[in-house]
Length: 383
Image (tube, rainbow, N blue to C red; front, side, top):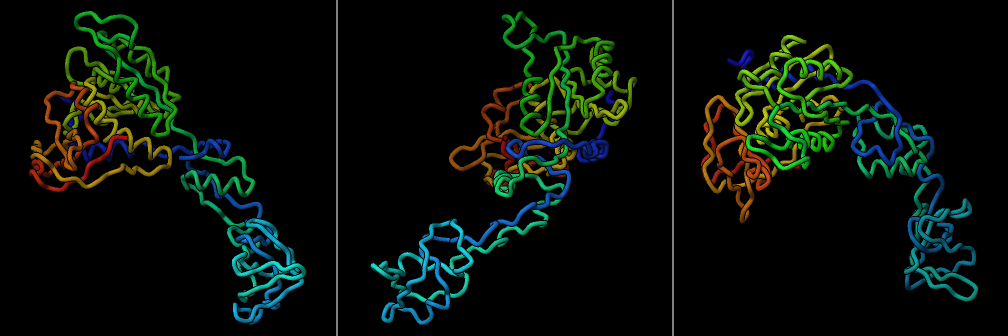
């Protein structure tokens, strides 16, 4: 029997409650900081622009000298300065006349449009002023943010650390990928690779251990040897069979918060902790492991990294009905075809090709028995 059986919503709340945001910080180059949350306010050391500059190609002039200028009554100036976009406008001038409103004569500049003070001039500090808080603590940096920091001459920023995750694949039937041809009853260890790729994509420092056999002491040793991680992800051996050691080891070594979740696929999942390290036990079937990664591990790690748990979604029309077991949260693989969502209704959480063919998944809440054909639902896109 599952020892701490839980609904999906409750299980997620329990896991998130035991995954506080990481408070350690580090200084990194701005060029490496996209997607990271800053750990302190970033204050501009300079004004931007740092001088009055031309906003377009033309001629720098004194605005008062252009008063009344129009095509039928042009003004001729002897005091002017040719400027290009971005050039400094000297203090002797306070406006820029566009090229198309001028004609350069041999000894003067003909102007056919009046300009007011600071017309076509970007003033000093117009964008950012010195001492201004450019980004507040917790802001997640994007490429344009990095460009702004670089324009201010800021080369490094203080950010919150990445979650450190150790992945422990377990199972006596597993063989390292590509090591040799498989024998009957064996399988390549693919879940650890899939988990590592997703965790790195989600902003973690992920390290995958060698395969650990179905041995409680070896699983315990692997856990205790990696308690410097923020999270340990154990893959396989999570159900209630004779060789499903992971939840038992977790309960004996630390705390077992949840064992068994009303999630399809992904029922044999466990959460717990050893000392201050969160431990998540994923099912061995690839589709179930992926469902748990998305539904539970991803939001937990995003919280640790001070990031929002935003998952891209699009509205789609169902080409076929999606049935669901009442009381269970179902994650149904879906492929987009001719503008509609076609559920991939294959049985078994080990059918990996169903994920490869899918564009994402539709979540059926615990209180629904599914969705009808033609109904518009939200499709969570695979990243």
